[in-house]
Image (cartoon, rainbow, N blue to C red; front, top):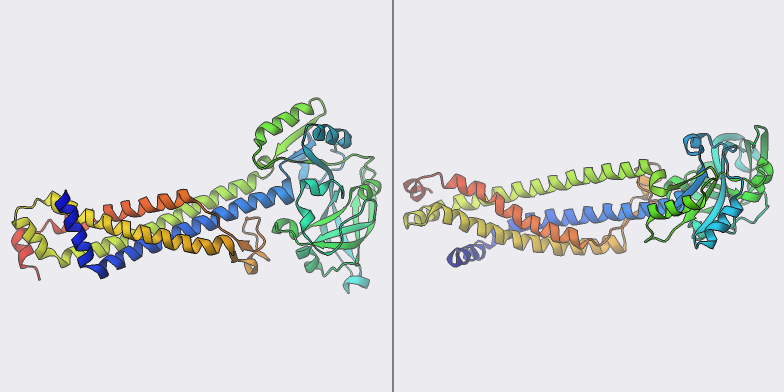
Length: 415
């Protein structure tokens, strides 16, 4: 074995160009594997964070029948005593806020927007004092100011404002059905514009004070949902169960963010499967390149192989010598790939790649507005290193087996 390892090492140094070319193919494949894995893992982590910070919170309390009818935004399936529930939650160290979500027609007047128009929209009425303790909108203001309790005002997402041509100081009219079926028109001034990093929210965001909505909609203090913020390291299912026990007998249900975002999670799982397929194809391409290089290397040394056999070296030892040589190439290529992957990931983690030109008008499922940033995943790098070594070792077996089918005289006469 010592002789075979020494022989393989000498062949690696003797054929430097071939060794570097083959190792380079391995290094490129592993670098792409590390880069893509980092980018998609980072996109998934940031998407989940933006999902909880701007859409679902950690959990949500709803009327038992609301979730099945959520697309209609029913005001009659409400929570009648939100302040008592919030106080109970806060007494147990849980941050919470109440909201009213309702839909209707947004009417734009010609005085501000140049022409009259209308479109379907959804408004979220928030508690200006408590809401930012649960959601992350407190750092998203880019123009104007935040809402104040009791005023006839609205905040817009920046993409939504851009799409309708709204600016701070413009007035909109929102027509909706109140609690009981009557129609109500609300004249609201645009007092601020938010740039939310969640594109799904930024495209359609309208917010108004909950006290104003309560008066217009005749909610009498009732709300459609109570949102809950939990620590990042919290056991969400256990906390949801604990909150549900606090609400026992109130005809309310508590839903975790995973339960509300089941469609997103299914999409993320499908994306992971597609990513695995892409990464597998990268390795197949690298394996084919390694195999072809090893095949050429072996056929260049057919006479050497025939001399080794004529001197009594068994086919098993010859095959093992070439596989050890291939393993050496794999080690060199994998080490180069890890180094290149780390260098590429440094840029991805600290700067990221701007896909804003795509995400502005296209929904790809991720809750990212523009920048894809990576994450450090040492487990992926270790796995990539061993996969590179194993693949390069295994693929050397096939061309060696093919060359060993030739008899010794044919090997010695080979040109």
